[in-house]
Length: 65
Figure (tube, rainbow, N blue to C red):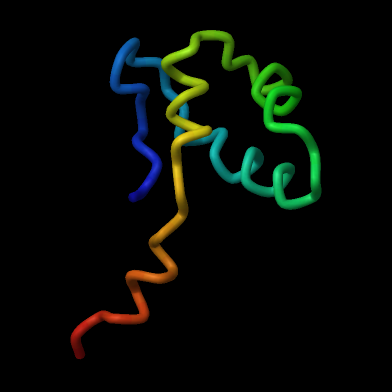
């Protein structure tokens, strides 16, 4: 699933924060601290990031030619 542009519940724009979140998590930083630093305080926005899996690279392997 691709990260949505806005939070489904509150409508806050969140897509521009996804790359930084993904990079910092891969470096080993705690997700809670990252979400606090990015300014995501509402539980609905936080759940959008914590529940997201980046399957786009996996799906593109099976693209029909």
